[in-house]
Amino acid sequence: MPLSPVDVVSPAFERMKRQLFNPFRWGQWFRLALVGFLAGEIGQSGGGTAGIPFNLGASFPRPNKFQVPSPGGEPFFFVAILIGVLLIAIVAVLLTYVGSRMRFVLFDAVVEGECRIRDSWGRRGAPAFRYFVFQILFALTGFISVAALIGLPILAALTGGLFQNASQHIVLLVLGGIVVGGLFLMLLFTLVLVQVLTKDFVVPQMALEDVSVSDGWSRLWSFLKADKVGYAGYIGMKIVLRIAASIVLGIMGFIALLLILIPFGGIGLIGVLAGRAAGLEWNPLTIAIAIVFGTLAVLALILLGALISVPAVVFFPAYSMYFFAERYPPLHALLYPRAPEPDLSSPSIP
Image (tube, rainbow, N blue to C red; front, side):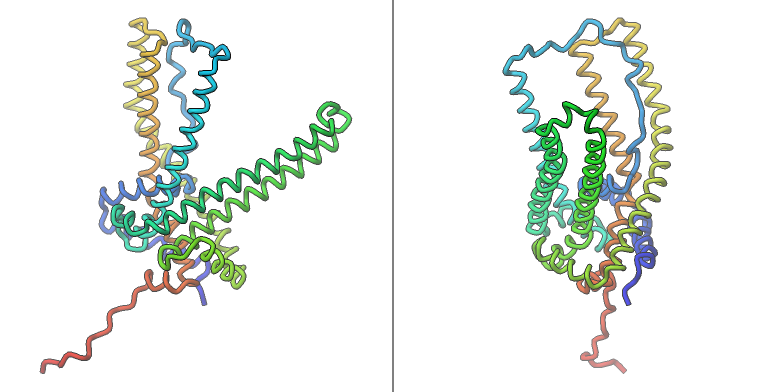
């Protein structure tokens, strides 16, 4: 009988301990932090310093002389906006592609117990590209679905004059808002669920059998119908584990953040006070310097969160693998390799 979602916690935890601490290697830790961050596993683990509010700009001098010039309706302003949107879209697509490749690198790292980025990157090109195409199409589908779900009711309310006489249609507007809000939450849950199931159970099939996303989902759908209770328990258990990991990693990230802010915050405060004493004000040069230091600070926090989240980066994929291995023989053969049989053909020596 397949292991329950609770039973696979222990082997996943043991694999995480073996890979990270037996023995402990800084190189392995840094590579897994990089792979986990680019694969999007860190954000799902609630890791590190995410969500910790801080404000380092309260002591900076207020702008009193330098002001951003008004665009005045010039076409260059709109061209700059279009270029900015285009650059953001290009960066998003590139990050999605790299994340798709890193998802397979992370799969290999957990299965093999060793993170070899270059080797996995070269071996998993074809399935990773198919997964990348799926993610792009899935993102577009989700965006269109959300836009239609929210935009169509608003358009209907506008054309029907409900907003012009809102006081006379308050009950209809409230009920409509509740219905649309409920449908939006259901749609959001469905989109997240499809993404998680694809990442956890379709990617292993693509890696081991080089199948397409649709073929992997077709097989997964048969698994879901055959074991509804098991997969429902897996989703529930994973939510509980994510919450627990977010709490633990959040506490660790907060402590690490305090340890970093004590020395570096003092240096920053000295720099601000020295700038004020020298009469520095906001101008293109000081703004550029502030942007550079702010970017370095954000990158340092991201690195800190990634390093703290490495145990979760290994544990959660391992948890998914051990659960799925009980239902998917090719993965079971990798996680539970058979001992080599003795060679009986060679003559024994008396």
